[in-house]
Amino acid sequence: MQLTNPSPSLHNEDLAPATERKWGAFSIFNVWTSDVHSLYGYFLAASLFLLCGSFINFVIAIGVGSMVIFFLMSLVGNAGVRTGVPYPVLARASFGTFGANVPALVRAIVACFWYGAQTSAASGAIVALLIRSPDMLAFHQNSRMLGHSTLEVICYVVIWALQLLIIQRGMETVRKFQDWAGPAVWVMMLLLAITLLVKSGTFSFGSEIPQDVLLAATADAGISAAPGSFAALAAVAATWITYFAALYLNFCDFSRYAVDEAALRKGNLWGLPINLLAFCLVAGITTTAAYSVYGEVLVHPDAISAKFDSWFLAALAALTFAVATLGINVVANFVSPAFDFANVFPRAIDFKKGGYIAAAIALVLYPWAPWNGSAAHFVNFIGSTMGPIFGIMMVDYYLIRGGRLDVNGLYQEDGEFKFSGGFNPSAFIALAVGMVFSSILPTIGGILPAWWGTYGWFFGVAIGGGVYFVLRMGARTQDSRPAGLT
Image (tube, rainbow, N blue to C red; front, side, top):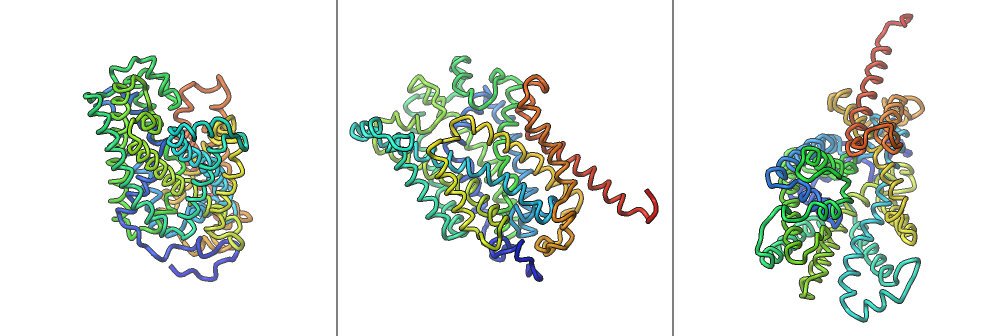
């Protein structure tokens, strides 16, 4: 749409409503192949698969979770198609024209940490391949730089730089990269699965793996219940849904480029419930076949490929999963902070500069690798605030405004979304209350039951959104009363 006199403090070319809508169903589908087909996505999928205990349980837990993801992504995705605006601009409707910088920066902070973590994971796959050479192994063991091996530093910087090459030409290049990388990862995953199934001669769901070994191997997934139990299946579905918490906020950064809602719906349908079920199935049977072949529960694909006798297969696997991890970094951890930082200072920062800031932060953090230490808990704490933010934004857009929004007003300092000095008090009260139950109380031992943390994001959505709805409807009632009444 054509904006009328947008405020320079709220507008630049990248933050304006999208005018070129070239993303069809295939490109939307590949947003999801890029987002989930990473090293950590594979690990989580394999772990959750093994914790289901049977094929029926797998279909129920992962299937229900994937359908919920499809529904939630459709909510924020449709808002992106209809308005054409990125996440931080859409947040202005509920948080205020300047208040939206708070949820934008929360998302950006989480993205910067995970940008470094995913870059480290991708470079680690390359390091695992290179140290198959005795000379490289010796170099890896004997040369140090910035608290890491020199080989790790070199690979990290190379992978870090490759991502900048992808992004520097803008969102259309992101689309083209995804359209190539997504199918390539699927081909490699199927090759990995078939190779191991042939070697093992079995097709199973992990029932032959001793339960103590299984629980130890999947401990990082955060589920302690017995595999196959109702508690485990509920936690599997919740964990799978929560894994996408960041993209529930900023999926409109991509859906704004969709040609229409039909293309979005078709791309989401193939990319979410169908693709996610298939991905988890392939990851799970690959892991169980690897157990039969190697006698170990290897839930990380680079650990499996490192055991291949063939250099060619090992190299193909390492490179493919490195590319897959680049895909999720571009989708989840580069595009979002690029728009988020641009939203804070639109006069000085455009999309590319915002992305460079995020990449620079990830590079500066690398010597300390905070994603491997206690700072990761800080990221999870901050990240859990994304539940209340999502609840507030969706309640505002669908329940308060009925899916209708004055897009031009999002770019006006003195318009409808000014609220109180550019901040909406109702949104920030709801955010604070939601954070108490999604982030603060779960970290204080003994106040809430142990299982609460698994569902913290859901409580954040429900409580944050519910409080916001009550406050906004109360404010509307107050505003509609005749003068002199209290």
